[in-house]
Each structure stands twice: as C-alpha cells, then as structure tokens.
Length: 207
Image (tube, rainbow, N blue to C red):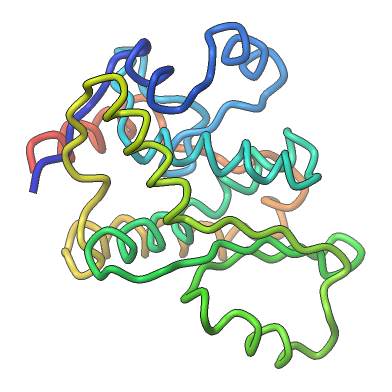
C-alpha cells in the first residue's frame, strides 16, 4: 500500500476549503486532523485522513451541529471514523458515522455498517434527542473526484483494519479516551504532541 502526504495547496484542492476558512477555524479552535490532533505537524504534511476529518466536520456543521462542537467530536472520536474509513477502503463496506445527543451532557459517537443503523437505533432504550450522520463513502468519493479534477494522485487513505499498527494506534486512542472520559466531556481532548503527530506521518508515509 502507499500512503502519501500533501501540501497545503493540495489539501485545499482535495477538500474544497479555502485558506481564509482555515485561518478562521484556527482562530476559533475549529481545526481538525486525524489521530485526535487539531492540525498536522508544523511541516504541513497533510494526510488523506486529515482531509477526511475536515469534510466530516463540514458535513456535521451543514447538518446543524455547531462547528466547534463538530470539530471537538471529530477529534475526540478519531478512532471511530478512522475504523470506518479503513473498512470502506479495504473491505468495501458502506460505513455510517453517527453522532447523537442522548440528553443532558451525554453524547455518543460510533461508526458501523449503514444497513444495520436503523436496527441499532430501534434497539436503544430511548431515541436520541439529536442525531447527526455522515456516510463515509460519500466523503471519500468527494475527495477522489476533486483529486481527479486537480490531477492529484492520492495513494491509499489509511491502513487496513487488521494491520498491527492500525490496531495499536486505535486501541491506544480508545483506551486514553475511556480513561479520561469525564475530563474529555468538560475540556478539549488532548491531541498528540508535535513529536507524536510527526511520528504518525513518518510511519504512514513509508508504508
């Protein structure tokens, strides 16, 4: 497989964002990237999954969620949508990302097969007060179409879900969130440090 990194200008072409919006998001704490980060490392190596993160935030915002809250959930539940992206790409599954307000301060986010979602909702003790969904295949197809138009070769989006590095990263991320769940719902989640984020990029771009 081949995971590539992209320049700022290529990222703008792949996401349909513009530089002014990126600057505004930065000022208001609304930037997103993969692995729970707010932005890529200072060398501006954008990964395809960073582009996916931005478009998920944008779609949640268009569906009525506050942009800053949408950014928070994209970062805090990075493991959920990364699992979904991997399943779409490598297992040819239609995966839905859902974010739901269960009442009070209780929110929930998960991804899973689109065809199972209605049955899952019916099995909940009570329906969510608010529900936002994103079809991940649509996000990835949007990026592919923009890449074709711009003449950008994409490579792979992410690792296979059964790859040891994938399992290690997502398990560590999930465990950290569960351990600090109370704090996460009161504060911004802690993303990776500059060194950790650079390490993700270095590993991915050599696979």
